[in-house]
Image (cartoon, rainbow, N blue to C red; front, side, top):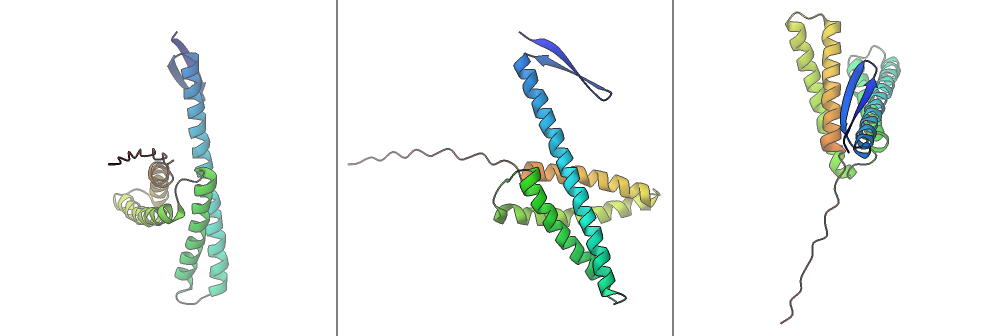
Length: 171
């Protein structure tokens, strides 16, 4: 028997039509998705904090050396990217595929996000948007892109292959 269930989250009102079991399944799925997004956001914030602290540390060590700032930024970004990859793979998405497959995909995504970040930020400021607002829009947009790519491509749950049946014919 189908019943209307009303779920109110903050100020959103969601009506779900279905059996109690179907509605329970939908609610559990929504809660799981929300938890995943929160864990992803937390790993991103932790990685940012690590990146920033390492940048400050490396900058202090390199001092006024000509290439010090650039190398400090790159070194901090590499370490924080490895940290972020590990958090996302094992704590946010719980495994996914093999490192040999998903690490190159993650590196490609990180390079794409860095490039898109620069292009989008430049484009928005060229259109007259103030840099702080452009940065927020850029980061929110790329957060969604990064989460989507990591969820749907890089760390997606692989379905186990069905065993192929082999028929042996002896003559």
